Figure 1 (cartoon, rainbow, N blue to C red):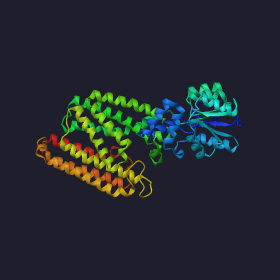
Figure 2 (cartoon, one colour):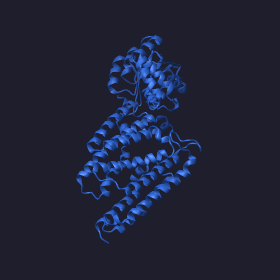
Figure 3 (cartoon, rainbow, N blue to C red):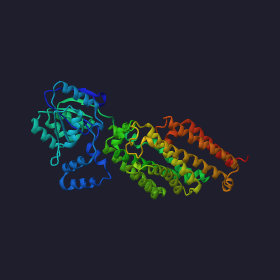
Figure 4 (cartoon, helix red, strand yellow):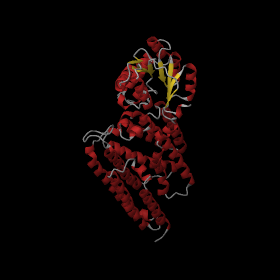
Length: 486
């Protein structure tokens, strides 16, 4: 029987033995050390901790990280099936031990929060209790084969070899086979499924719809028949997708505490523990390399680097700065169009930049208002990792609506230009686009105030049938204005 066939599969019972339970990857799906590192990537103390790693070793490094990192054991993604098993064993009088390579500060906080463990065996500033070191510590405490051990990966094989029985928790099949040859197995407890689907979700492919903005310069330049432009735009589209997914992964890894407090974001792959931090961060690095390679091939390397720098700055700091954050979000929309212009050789006009600037600022403000509307924070309290409180919502709505109307005004002035009229057979038809764009934005604001906006507004629009009708109507008007004389 495989681990996937049952959440908890009893196989062998040796309840007289004290049960020693690993923390990272076993009791919790997370890695507390990696979470501690990711929680303060801009903190100068991280540099000090890394220096400690090289000068004094891994145990001292863990001590520094645990001392500096914000940590709330209540937010960790625990393996509920294992917790249920421990509750049952505790009720039957079994001695429970939290035995972990994590620093004792982290381990004691978790043990106090869980309230099931009789004692804690953990790393300190000198000793790193991982693998054989943990096995030696447990043998010194309970005697060889005098304890049961619950673990999850190949580093636990040496502990299982010294134990009297094993609990296989969230274990890969290859490791499980090796463990069964070493020790009798009490129970196999399944964890999350393979992280591939979780990784795909964490990459947020639905957000790639925003990268279709790179194709707009082809339409505004009336270059639909330019096949080389489409090829170049496709390359930069892929570059933006890979780079954006890399940044999403990095952002989620550094924003775990805030995400776990959020009513919806707590279900994200990193926050829920479905995706190991190590896997996600490795994928982030590979996606970054892919994005930069595609950018170089499309001649937009500087644009993608600028986008990455802007997006990273937003994720690490600027998202917490009121108003700066929404202007940066608007700029991140605009730079996609700019990248499309650079790749295709069709430059953006000042009119298009002005229109998109107001439009995207309005959408950024709309997104922030939607987040404020969905939060359950107490009135006047700042939203986690945002520079706003619920009291700011009315003024943000005002700013956003003004930006939306300003974008429609710029569009109307553009339609009125003689230069614009000269490019179309029936320029008067273009006036139909103005009320359509204004209607679309007003509808987004109405949806937000009614609580329907739970996504980025562009993602919401991609799933909204009314937005599709408006978009089709705009395209039809452009086609008629360009090809038919009225």
